[in-house]
Structure formats: structure tokens, C-alpha cells
Length: 445
View 1 (cartoon, rainbow, N blue to C red):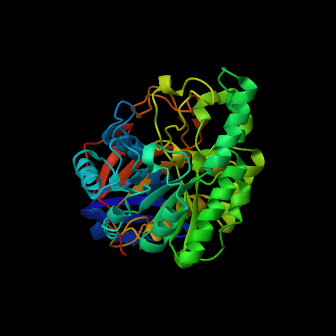
View 2: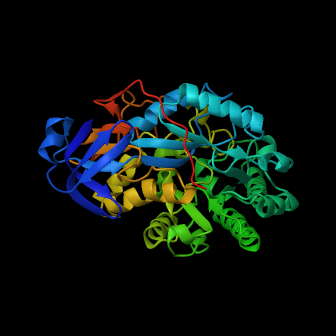
View 3: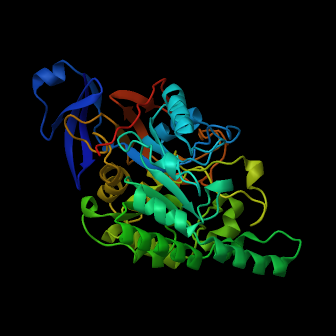
């Protein structure tokens, strides 16, 4: 057995000095006083004095690019990066090649996860304009959810038929997640700026004006309207505007049917940063104004918004070159998301208890993840030790993403990840990811 001794345990809205006993894959005991002598004498003791012990983060939105796009990333490389960042479980999106839009392709991805993933894993089933029959085959106890792209996406994964959307929202009895941007508004905006700039690439500062706040709000409002009408469990991903916050109710998460996620980059960057960072911060939905960033943070803290994730979406550096028309949208964040949120704690914008609530507890509640997301007896021992007194500078040498870059290169964080525990094993320490394998997530639905 392992004993994580004398840590500051951050869990369920409070922090206290205590110890955690791990027996195999699970947490056997949580002590808020000195553990009994027989425990101390018969355990491998890991001295965590001065360190914070958090539940491992659960990232409900990543693009690990496998199958078919493995020149950018793959399940192995990105799950290793996740563990290095204290993210112990991930949920991967379906816009791969081939797309995960049939049960056959979904099963294939689970085989890849079992073979290659260092962290715990689940995969979304993707919706198209014509695969409702496949969506109905999905077992809600085995799959995190169905993903609907209500905005630009690859090929047939843009679900732009109102009739299809109504059928999905009415007939699929499991969690539906959405990417919400109104495609016709984006097309109108793009045509206007193409006319202004002619054959030249459009400068990046126009990206949040093309993929505008109105395009986001209109699409999110449509999704909420459909969910209200059909009683759908809806989770809207990567919200990017302050106006969208008002679409969500404030009440206990377990009682909500309609929920919202915000990503770390929308809490970190603003449109003023395009001049400095350029295409490194080009995402869809776009990073928008300071007022939007601040409104999203307020919505997170007051209970309108529920989950913090990454939308981790690597591209090769060569693919990120150019302006609005040429540079790929998306960037890698899963190795640094927890450190980013803890940096906001350092800045006084939220508490470390808030971070744990939104990155660990909330996704566990929302997705009904089986025995993860908390430091509780009988739960899987997915935890992370954070050193709040040791800074960490992000450099090309310590980046584990396959793409080899980060929008945060050169940034120094006030905290560092000391160790990550996965299903009871030390999976990361001293800058190294161990040879571990994650487990397929289960769902109590």
C-alpha cells in the first residue's frame, strides 16, 4: 500500500492537512489526523508536506487526432502529456479520419485507447446529417456522449439540417454535447472581409469578427431552445462570450439538464493578444474581448457555467502559419491546463477549491463518471500532487505534445506538478511519465 502523507488535500470545497492510503487501484482511507502507526509502518510513505493533493482533472474535450491525423498527435503522446499536467482522464472528439460516426469506428477507437492510452479514456460518437440510426445504437453506460457540430467542421459532421437537429435532440436519450457557431453568420462575415482584402490573407485580428460573438450566441441559443423543447440533456462546449452565460441557470449541477463548459484559453487570452501571439491563439470559437473573458470567469464562479476543459487540438507548427484563411484553428493545452488555472488562483481570480470543483468534480457529476473525480474512500486513486512553492517555465524541451510547441512557451507558472497518480500507480514524477496504461471510463447512467 502507498500512503500520501501530510498533504494539503483539496477536495469537495475545502482544504485540510491529511493523508491518503492507496490500496491497489483505489483509495482505501482518507485521514484528517495522523494515520495509525500500523498504517505508517506498513505502507510506502510518500511525504507530501507542503504540497497540495488534488483529484486528477477530467478533461471532457480533447482532440488526440487518432486515427488518421497522427502526424499532428496521437493517443499515446497526448495522453502522456495529459498525465504530466495532472489530467488523469480525457474524453476524445470524433472528427478524426475516418470520423467516429459509426459503431464500428467507435469500437475501433476504443481498441486504440486500450492499446495506447496512458491516461483513462472515453470517446464521443459523432453526429452527422444522416447517422441517427447509428447514434441510437450507442450504449450510454459505455460512451461519454454524442457530439454535434452546430458550426463549421470537417465534411458531413456539420449538422446544419434543422430537421436532423430536432430528431437528434428528441430521440437520443443520452448526453449531447455541441460546438455552437452559426454557420451562415460566419459565411456572411467572411465574405465581407474577403471583399475588403481581396486576394490577401485576412489578418488574424479579424478572426473574432468573422467567427463573431453573434454567431456563437445565436447557435447556442438555438441549442438551448431545442433542449428545452425536447427535455434533452445538453452540454455546450467551449463557450466564448459573456452573452452566452445568460443562457444557463444557476442551480446544483446534478439538477441541471442544460450545462456549459469554458476552456482555459478563453479564460486566459483576449483579442488584444493576437498582436503578440498571432496564430498560436487562433481557435474556433475565437478568443474574444476582455469583457467576454471576464464575463466567462464570473459565470464560472457564480454557477451559470459548470466545467473547465481544454479543447486540446494540436496542429503542426507549419499548419499554424498564416492569417484567418490559412492558419489552422486549435492548439495544444492539456499538459498545462491545470497549471494555467492555478495561476489564476495565484492572481486572486478564483480559489484552488474552485479549480478542483470545475476540473474534477463537475465533469464527474455531469457525465456520471464511475468512481472518479473525488478523493473518496472506494474511488479510483487518480490524484495529482502540486508544489505551490516551485515555479515551472514552459519550454520547448519540456513540452510533451507531438506537435512540439505550445502557445505558452516562455511562460513561467507559479506552481508545478510534482506527481500524478493513476489508478493507484505513480504515473508521472520528476518530469517523466511512467509506463502505465489507463482504463476505459465507466458511466453510472
